[in-house]
Image 1 (cartoon, rainbow, N blue to C red):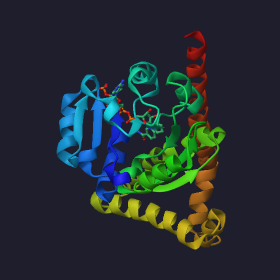
Image 2 (image 1 turned 45 degrees about the vertical axis):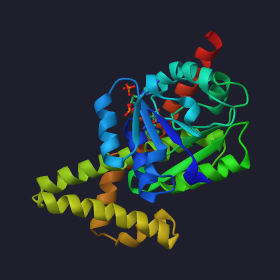
Image 3 (image 1 turned 180 degrees about the horizontal axis):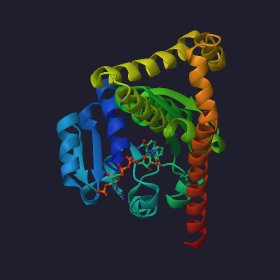
Length: 280
Ligand SMILES: NC(=O)C1=CN([C@@H]2O[C@H](COP(=O)(O)OP(=O)(O)OC[C@H]3O[C@@H](n4cnc5c(N)ncnc54)[C@H](OP(=O)(O)O)[C@@H]3O)[C@@H](O)[C@H]2O)C=CC1
Ligand SMILES: O=C(O)[C@@H]1CCC=N1
């Protein structure tokens, strides 16, 4: 039973918190069965303990043996050292979920004891409110029960998609990094509206509600975005003028470039790590 399992987050940053927040509010795993750890920032562990009633433990005191599910939630640069410690303590039945961008299941399987079940996961920070778009790809040693448990956990933080691992880089570019593009867009919408005299508090709400409404229209009406866009755009109207300015200023190209840039960075991290493995 999932509620009897102990889940340990190695890494106590924004992504770990976003996932913990979603999991704790769903009560699928009791908060006393959730452990979170880092290497140096004790205050951060106190903060998470107080907010979510989980257990905060410094890395050196973390009993890996006591965990059923281990979530790797550190930056890519820190994974190599983390694997060295894990390899000595991990047991074959323990399931490893990695949310680290660019880190492949091959890399993790290589770095851990042979036959370790590993699932690569790409959530986003909307996990915090149960609205993540999360992808999963299984490694070679994962059973169907591992996938069932993983999906049950991740469904508490939003929608879950099973994809081939070769699509993980672009998924990361679209959905892992995606919220940041919308925040950037919102920053610019807010700034421009404020400069034109719209009330600041009102603007914040209006911008968020406009994006939320557009996203829900896509989900609920199951219509192509281009078709929805056309319905907003009256001939010779305000939207046509707005879209023309957007296109003239490289709006579409900029969005594609953002996704391609993030996708390439994910591929680059995988390649860097694969090279390190060869040298090791
Ligand atoms: N933020 C996001 O939107 C998303 C992030 N991700 C992925 O999640 C991962 C974490 O990102 P994010 O939360 O933003 O990063 P943060 O920098 O906020 O957090 C990283 C955490 O890892 C800890 N850490 C590093 N090495 C170790 C170790 N060996 N043992 C225990 N703790 C360790 C750090 O604390 P200390 O230094 O004290 O050890 C820190 O708490 C990244 O790999 C990223 O690719 C994936 C999807 C979305
Ligand atoms: O910026 C990053 O590398 C991480 C991965 C996806 C979102 N944040």
